[in-house]
Length: 94
Image (tube, rainbow, N blue to C red; front, side):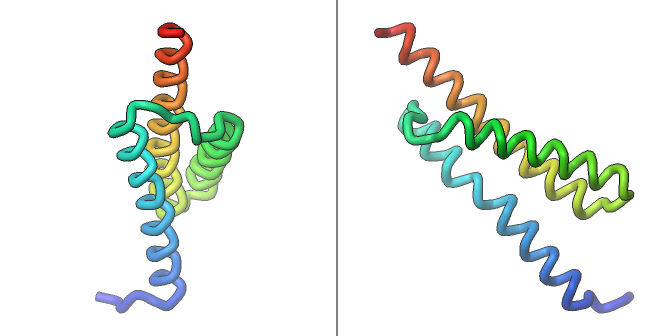
């Protein structure tokens, strides 16, 4: 068994930070049932970026890039979905 290189450790730490960074926002939006503070344009751009990174990972046969960005894509998509869901609910009740 090979010991991980410093490059692998840095890459793993970066992926872990990126993947976990979205969870507090998801829980906050879900708990408060609103996402007024979330920028729709920013999350559309973020989701687009993660789609492109995931495709890049697939095309370059890099499973760490593919996997970490696919997870981030899913989490960012949840935030985007909640933003749209709670924005629609707010408009309907107005």
